[in-house]
Length: 190
Picture 1 (cartoon, rainbow, N blue to C red):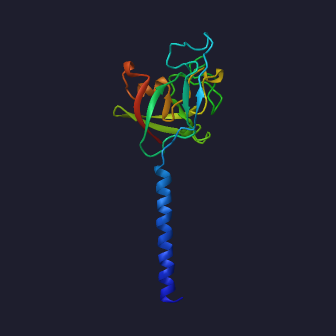
Picture 2 (cartoon, one colour):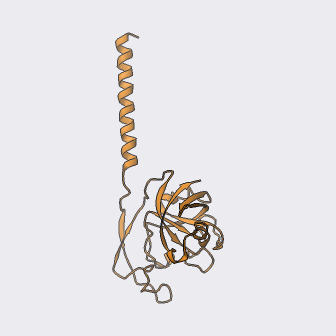
């Protein structure tokens, strides 16, 4: 191979690497955009308190997402609280293991994109807040694609950046009980 061919091959290879890096960077930089909207239905009185923010409002539209923000070593999220016990606000048994979980066990449900078609099922994540961290097992999905129906307790679709956690997670992070419900956190795969 002549000197010109080697230089041309190297140049082509470098151009290929630059283009590939640009494509990867662009894909990683893309934002998670809404995938649609659903119209809320009024829940039966025994299913959900219509005055609650957790209940769908009749004829109100709710944004749905099939994706979540990209996961990193420090992914920003909103921590919400869930009762994964039988009869709790988590609804039926957890999707990953078809079981209920004690409030004393650190477990979470993740927004649809982060749940990733059950690929994070029964894996631990680490949640960081308030100068502390806790490992919690992923046992369920906080569905960002559907809601406002009996299967979802007439609750709206989950936002795309939610780590829905048991009481044990909140306690381990030493978050004052008065602040339980909606709290800024970071998380990562363990």
